[in-house]
Image (cartoon, rainbow, N blue to C red; front, side, top):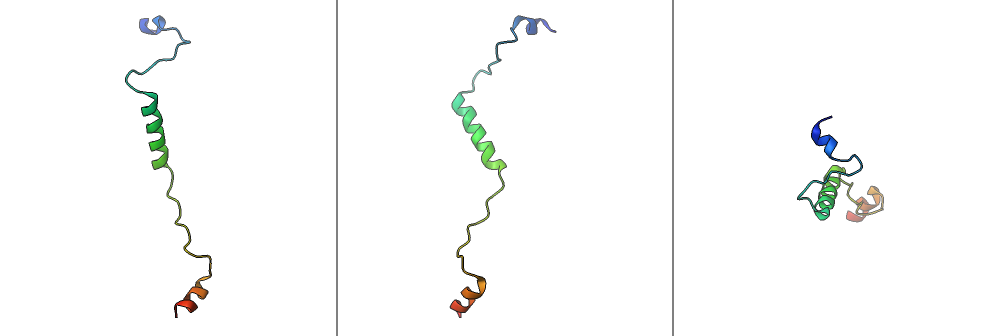
Length: 57
C-alpha cells in the first residue's frame, strides 16, 4: 500500500473534481440513448396488404 492510500480512509469515497451531478446524469442519459437499438417504425395501418392493394386499384 502506498503512502497516499494510507492517508485516505477507506470509508470515504473519492470525489472527482469538476464534474457536477447534472453533467453526470446528462452523460448517462446520452450513453443510454445511443446504446439502445433503434425502434421499429410504427405500422401505418392494421389492414392486410391485400385489402390496401384492392383499395388502391
